[in-house]
Image 1: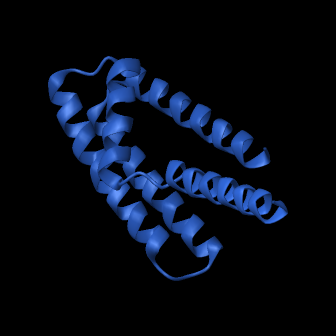
Image 2: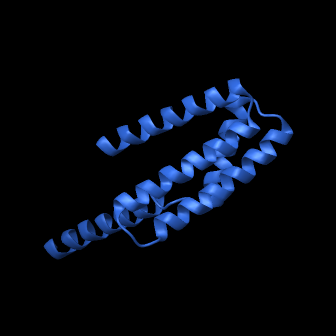
Length: 122
Protein backbone atom coordinates (compact mmCIF):
# COMPACT_ATOMS: atom_id res chain seq x y z
CA UNK A 1 0.00 0.00 0.00
CA UNK A 2 2.83 2.40 0.86
CA UNK A 3 4.44 1.63 -2.52
CA UNK A 4 1.25 2.67 -4.34
CA UNK A 5 1.15 6.04 -2.54
CA UNK A 6 4.77 6.74 -3.39
CA UNK A 7 4.20 5.68 -6.99
CA UNK A 8 1.14 7.90 -7.26
CA UNK A 9 3.07 10.83 -5.78
CA UNK A 10 5.94 10.34 -8.23
CA UNK A 11 3.50 10.05 -11.14
CA UNK A 12 1.70 13.28 -10.16
CA UNK A 13 4.98 15.15 -9.74
CA UNK A 14 6.22 13.87 -13.09
CA UNK A 15 3.04 14.96 -14.86
CA UNK A 16 3.25 18.40 -13.29
CA UNK A 17 6.86 18.76 -14.46
CA UNK A 18 5.96 17.75 -18.01
CA UNK A 19 3.02 20.17 -18.04
CA UNK A 20 5.23 22.99 -16.74
CA UNK A 21 7.87 22.27 -19.39
CA UNK A 22 5.25 22.31 -22.15
CA UNK A 23 3.80 25.61 -20.95
CA UNK A 24 7.19 27.34 -20.80
CA UNK A 25 8.42 26.39 -24.26
CA UNK A 26 9.70 29.30 -26.30
CA UNK A 27 7.57 30.77 -29.03
CA UNK A 28 8.93 30.59 -32.55
CA UNK A 29 10.36 33.76 -34.11
CA UNK A 30 7.27 33.93 -36.32
CA UNK A 31 4.95 33.77 -33.29
CA UNK A 32 6.94 36.42 -31.42
CA UNK A 33 6.99 38.73 -34.47
CA UNK A 34 3.24 38.26 -35.00
CA UNK A 35 2.52 39.08 -31.35
CA UNK A 36 4.75 42.16 -31.46
CA UNK A 37 3.10 43.38 -34.63
CA UNK A 38 -0.40 42.86 -33.23
CA UNK A 39 0.48 44.79 -30.07
CA UNK A 40 2.07 47.58 -32.06
CA UNK A 41 -0.91 47.77 -34.42
CA UNK A 42 -3.26 48.21 -31.46
CA UNK A 43 -1.13 50.56 -29.35
CA UNK A 44 0.39 52.68 -32.12
CA UNK A 45 -2.65 52.62 -34.47
CA UNK A 46 -0.61 51.64 -37.52
CA UNK A 47 -1.77 52.16 -41.07
CA UNK A 48 -1.96 49.07 -43.29
CA UNK A 49 1.27 50.09 -45.02
CA UNK A 50 3.04 50.65 -41.70
CA UNK A 51 1.77 47.35 -40.35
CA UNK A 52 3.22 45.45 -43.31
CA UNK A 53 6.63 47.11 -42.91
CA UNK A 54 6.60 46.66 -39.12
CA UNK A 55 5.72 42.97 -39.51
CA UNK A 56 8.69 42.48 -41.85
CA UNK A 57 11.04 44.26 -39.45
CA UNK A 58 9.75 42.35 -36.43
CA UNK A 59 10.16 39.01 -38.19
CA UNK A 60 13.66 39.80 -39.44
CA UNK A 61 14.89 40.74 -35.97
CA UNK A 62 13.04 37.90 -34.22
CA UNK A 63 14.94 35.52 -36.50
CA UNK A 64 18.24 37.31 -35.90
CA UNK A 65 17.77 37.17 -32.14
CA UNK A 66 16.81 33.49 -32.34
CA UNK A 67 20.13 32.90 -34.08
CA UNK A 68 21.93 34.77 -31.30
CA UNK A 69 20.17 32.69 -28.64
CA UNK A 70 21.04 29.41 -30.37
CA UNK A 71 24.60 30.43 -31.19
CA UNK A 72 27.47 29.50 -28.94
CA UNK A 73 29.16 32.19 -26.96
CA UNK A 74 28.99 33.74 -23.57
CA UNK A 75 26.09 35.49 -21.98
CA UNK A 76 27.68 38.92 -22.33
CA UNK A 77 28.36 38.41 -26.04
CA UNK A 78 24.73 37.39 -26.57
CA UNK A 79 23.48 40.42 -24.62
CA UNK A 80 25.66 42.73 -26.73
CA UNK A 81 24.44 41.14 -29.96
CA UNK A 82 20.77 41.50 -28.92
CA UNK A 83 21.39 45.11 -27.91
CA UNK A 84 23.01 45.85 -31.29
CA UNK A 85 20.05 44.21 -33.05
CA UNK A 86 17.61 46.29 -30.97
CA UNK A 87 19.45 49.50 -31.89
CA UNK A 88 19.36 48.63 -35.61
CA UNK A 89 15.69 47.64 -35.34
CA UNK A 90 14.87 50.92 -33.60
CA UNK A 91 16.54 52.80 -36.45
CA UNK A 92 14.38 50.96 -38.99
CA UNK A 93 11.24 51.55 -36.92
CA UNK A 94 12.02 55.26 -36.73
CA UNK A 95 11.89 55.38 -40.54
CA UNK A 96 8.46 53.68 -40.65
CA UNK A 97 6.68 55.29 -37.68
CA UNK A 98 5.60 58.88 -37.16
CA UNK A 99 7.46 60.79 -34.40
CA UNK A 100 4.52 60.29 -31.99
CA UNK A 101 4.27 56.59 -32.80
CA UNK A 102 8.02 56.19 -32.36
CA UNK A 103 7.87 57.79 -28.90
CA UNK A 104 5.06 55.41 -27.92
CA UNK A 105 7.08 52.53 -29.38
CA UNK A 106 10.05 53.42 -27.15
CA UNK A 107 7.74 53.67 -24.14
CA UNK A 108 6.28 50.25 -24.97
CA UNK A 109 9.81 48.85 -25.22
CA UNK A 110 10.67 50.25 -21.78
CA UNK A 111 7.48 48.81 -20.26
CA UNK A 112 8.32 45.38 -21.70
CA UNK A 113 11.87 45.58 -20.33
CA UNK A 114 10.56 46.55 -16.87
CA UNK A 115 8.08 43.66 -16.95
CA UNK A 116 10.83 41.20 -17.88
CA UNK A 117 13.08 42.50 -15.09
CA UNK A 118 10.22 42.04 -12.66
CA UNK A 119 9.60 38.47 -13.86
CA UNK A 120 13.29 37.59 -13.44
CA UNK A 121 13.18 38.77 -9.83
CA UNK A 122 10.28 36.47 -8.97
